[in-house]
Structure formats: structure tokens, C-alpha cells
Length: 421
Image (cartoon, rainbow, N blue to C red):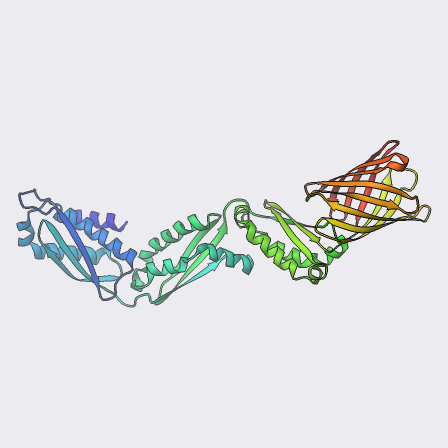
């Protein structure tokens, strides 16, 4: 805009054009000098503008013409820049005529210049942790804005603000594309730049937290839930794409928050968070221990007449990374029957576990295999060779505390609701 304005003004003041001669001005060299040197970007803009004026005014004219009318050309250039260069006074213009004519322009600020720049970032109601992450993405944005403004006359800050805005927009487009920006500059020796950020694109409206474990009761995890849920809520209002890009950071934050709970140290729990970003974001925190396995569940069978309610307690101790010795205690309220089944389990991989149990009351061995599909589905198979009985179950976890399982045997099928306590 500055170059266009200067060119228009120049054509209005100096409509004539020179005719090329043998010894003519072919190019222009520009030097801008100031007691208070302008910022580099502003100096380059000044140089470009003076270069444009010089080329329009001098290139193609004879060197002798420039020498003869040097004072007039110098006065004209000074007059043009005094009109358009807001915040500066042109103290001197000096031409050095030649095939490459030099133009020296000495400028002086009108009054106070910018000595310091502070950047204030407004992200609305986002948490301090998220604000810190955003500022980290911005990198040295404050330094780059300062490089544009420090040294400028206070009166020219508004004129130079367009350059600052372009610097910020270019940087944010590359480093923080999930946000739109709005810039407000309060000029002074201590110039304040207020940057307001607002999400661009879909944002996270709801966060659903699930705590899952195959080795400790859900009722123990419930004690740690409030602190983890509070940390998870920092995702609300953030752009989905921003969370997706920083998924590792947010998983680490959740893991760190959960690791501070006494339960984690007491049972040697390993935490593995999983985040699925979306407008409705799902967070699953898998909590497993390598020391013990303690599970408690209650069963209600629908479509089965006998022994259709039961409770089971599983108490196990890992003897290695893959093996577990355990005792399962079953209680059947219908006939007040207790069953004790010691056993052994082996972990074949992350999804498949199998082993052997022995029912002390019935004096029979039971072979079993559990296989998990993702986070919610499990396939269960039990075989009792002594009485040729098998049981096949497909279980779906509907909630942290409730699952549904369809069970198939040789004689009957039924649906079981499982309370995962």
C-alpha cells in the first residue's frame, strides 16, 4: 500500500518522463540512514518504496540531467516521503548521479520510539496447561513481533501494524493452524500487543472418561476418577484437530495426573491412556498391575431357572510376566453354596489368556481361555473334560461397571448381566 501511494503521488507531482540517452541512469541503489535505526522489516519496506520512487523518477534520464537538477530531485524525493512516511521526518536526501544512481535518505523519528513490546495471548477459558502448549507452538512469536516494532516511532506503529499482523498470521498458519487470530496493538514506548485466539473448525463439546482394568476392581479405580476427570475436562472447547495433533501430550498429562494417586503406587499400576478425539471425545484409561489381580463380579442370568444369581471373587498373584497363581471363590445365593477353585493362568499375548482351574467341591478340572477384541469385547471358553461340559460366552462391556454376556452350552443358552465391581 505504501509503494502504491508513493507511486501515485509521484506521478501526480512529476508527470514528465525523460528520454533515454547515451549516458543514462540504468539502476538505483538505496540507503536509509537514521539515528534510531528502524526495524529490519520496516527498513526493507522503506528501501523498496524509495527504490520504486527512484526508478519512476530517474531511471532512463540522462546522468547530466540528474546532475543539473540534483537539488530539485532531492527536494522532490524528500517532499514525497515527508507526506507518506508517517512517524518520520526526512532530514536529508542526497543523490549520487551515475549509471547506478545512489539515493541516501536520512530520517528522524517524530518523537518517542517503541522501546519494548509485550505480547498478551487471550485464549478465553482454556486451562493454563493448554495455554502453555499453545504458546509453545507459537515459538518465538513475541520476539518476531518485537523485531517489527521496536525502534519504530510510536506514531508509526499503526502504519506498521499491518506488517506485524502479516508476521503473526504467517506464523500461526504454519504453527497453530487450528486457531483464528485477532490482533490489537496499543502503541507506546511500552507497546502492548493483544492476540485473541478462537478455534477454527470442529471443537470438543463433550468428554467421556472410562477407567478399565483386567487386574483390579473398578470400585478401587472409582476413587481416582474425580482427579482424572478434572484433567480430562481441559480438552473441552479445544479444536478437534489440535487435540489430534497433540494427542501424545494430552495422554502424558492424563497419565501423570493419574500416577499421582496413592492407588497407583500401592498396587504398582501401569497406566495406558487412549484418546479418540472428536466433538464427543472418548478417553479410556487402562490401569493394570504386574503384582496382583483382584476382580469382583456379580452375575444375573436371564433365561436360566437354576443358580441364576452368583458372585465371584478372583484373587491372584503374578509369579512372572506371563503367569499367575490364583484362587476363585464363587457364591450362589439360591442354595447358599460356596465353590473354591484354585488355578493357574498364562498370558499368551496382550489379548489372550488361558489356564486351568480345579473345583475342590466337585473334584474336577476346568480348562479356560479368554480372548479380548479391542476394549469392549471378550470371548470366553471353558471346558470340563470329566463330565464333558463346555461353556462358550461372548461378553460386551456396556459401561465401566456393567457388561452383558451371551452364554451357549450343549443343553441351554442364556443372557447374563455382569456387574463388574
